[in-house]
Image 1 (cartoon, rainbow, N blue to C red):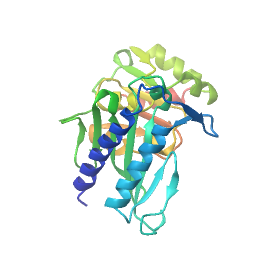
Image 2 (cartoon, one colour):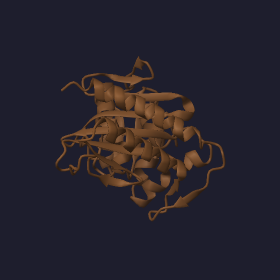
Image 3 (cartoon, rainbow, N blue to C red):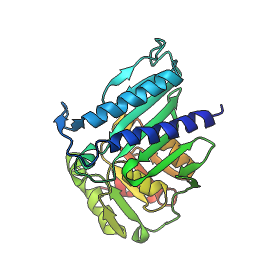
Length: 262
């Protein structure tokens, strides 16, 4: 299958959606709390509505699932199980950062084909950066091809994460502390920006104790094409595990050993 038209569409869509977020960014936008106690804003909703309209117009037979409006059948009435294609949307990943004017938030768009994430686009509007890939087409950071690092020693590795509290909730503070101890340094470059750092070779490890489908759906093709890994803490590749580990290939086995150790 030729994925180039889908990738071109997703890249431009993520960029255009990012322009919408900038209309609200650093302008004192208010928020509400959802049932899960996470914030949502008018910018989240407006951005997802725009993305959905563009997909429905361009690919009416495709199903869609997004963080703010859930799963919907295709524009021509096919359910998610009837359509081989499903777009996965997070209109603003890192809403807390967005609310406080931190530029590391992003727009995430992925395309599953028969249950496998085959392409992803991740736009950081406030940084004017975009990361995108599709199977067989390489991984691109703006207009240049990119790969994970070749660092093979913990003492040279950078560890990123979203929040230490997730490790506490999962009762795996040991992993958090050991990585901080073993690595060159660790930083809370959380949400999508941590994965971005690993995929572009500027960090080696990103760990999320909990990760929703839309938080990581773009990354399997990104890391396959960049030469790295994303999947569960048990080493299973993919975006559907409810947790996420992203790393370069050189450190994968050692990181999995550290996670397994009690």
